[in-house]
Amino acid sequence: MGAPELSYLRGYPAELVADVPRLLAEGRLGSMLRGRYPQAHAVRSETALYDYVAALKARHLRSAPPLAKVLYDPRLQIVRNALGTHTQVSRVQGNRLKAKREIRIAALFHDAPAAFLRMIVVHELAHLKERDHDRAFYALCVHMEPDYHQLEFDLRLWLTALELEPQPTPPPPPRRPGAA
Ligand SMILES: [Zn+2]
Image (cartoon, rainbow, N blue to C red; front, side, top):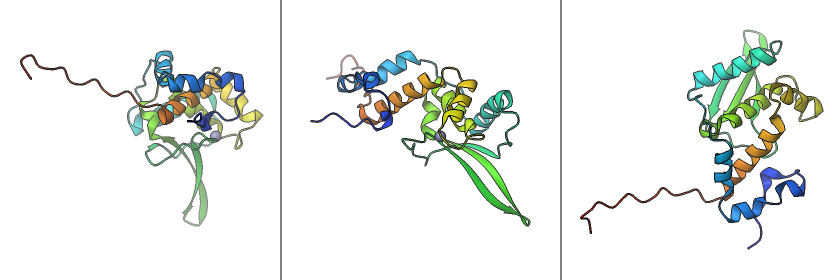
């Protein structure tokens, strides 16, 4: 069997991802990341997500246009190069075309570690000002989250584990004494 293709980790230096195939083969990548990021988040609803994004935006990007909509999208597949989607939906309102800003966060972040939700929200907010994944874009990400690069790398590891590592099966129910 060949090594699995690490599509989320394309573009990273080989030495940085050298251990990944072994960790995957041993089924340890996911648990390693859960150990590193044990903290869950409390952003459970769409309202909570909107408030969470709005608070970060108010702190760092006050001048960016207001957000019309923020949601967890169960249909959103994470594109390997572009992690989330920021869309500008044009709607006709009266006779004027008005661009509405939406941020869609893939539903799998609902159950992601808190740090990964923060990272993806920072990424999507940065797109309000910078369209491409260029220097200015990443500078803005780091301004909002100094640990951005490490978090994006670890998020990609986590996505790799979700995709390629067998998920732990729950332990069988305890046997009742007396049962055969
Ligand atoms: Zn992007």
